[in-house]
Image (cartoon, rainbow, N blue to C red; front, side, top):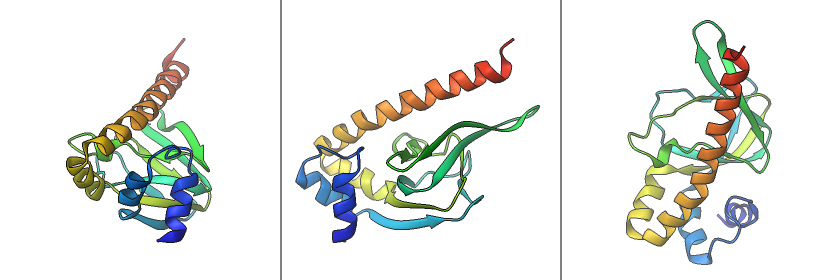
Length: 151
């Protein structure tokens, strides 16, 4: 747990979070690894986790009938993968595939939602941070769609 806590403290997404909230979050964390080409999640599946990328690259993709899989954004070390665990009905909005071997810290969304219900300050802090990620991902999607479907 100490190794996970040390990494969480250093991760850009969680920097500045108070010690009490970090202690709550580390109880929901575990190390994970994905092989090249492995799907981390697929659109429509239940979203139960999010990931802090430690090493590697992940492509966020969407499927378009005429175009096949379209990469919306590629993320890597220091980035956050997944926000659907936070917003009902808790289903993934995109596919995520490891472009190379990827190591991450997985955070259990059900565990965190429970902790946020009991500590609204933690919930508000996470919601503020994830709002920025959602905004960035939507902007990337908009730009990609303009590129694919624009004249």
